[in-house]
Picture 1 (tube, rainbow, N blue to C red):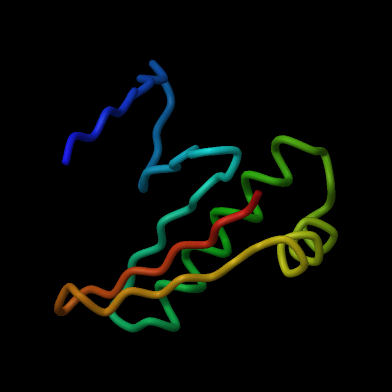
Picture 2 (cartoon, rainbow, N blue to C red; picture 1 turned 90 degrees about the vertical axis):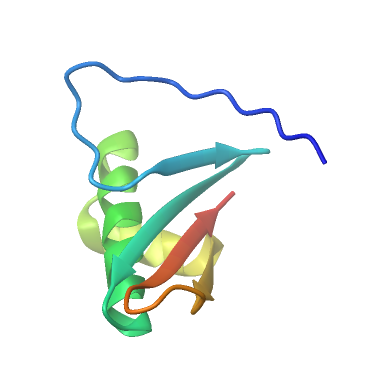
Length: 88
C-alpha cells in the first residue's frame, strides 16, 4: 500500500495537535488520559476552528458541529486516549 500526503507548514502559527483535511472533511485530533477528556479536547478544537473561520459564536459553532460532526474514539494507545471529531 502506498500513501501520498501533502503537509502544509504554517509559519508563525502554533498548533498543539494536527488538523487533518481529507476528502472535503476536516479532522480534529484530541488527546487525554480518558476517552471523555480526549473527546472534549477534540470538540473544543473543532469549535475554536469553526468560530475563527465562520465568525459564529461558540454556542452556535457547538450546535452546528453537533449536527454535522462525527465523533470517532480510539483506544489503541495507552495511557493516552485519542478521539477525533470529523466534520464535512
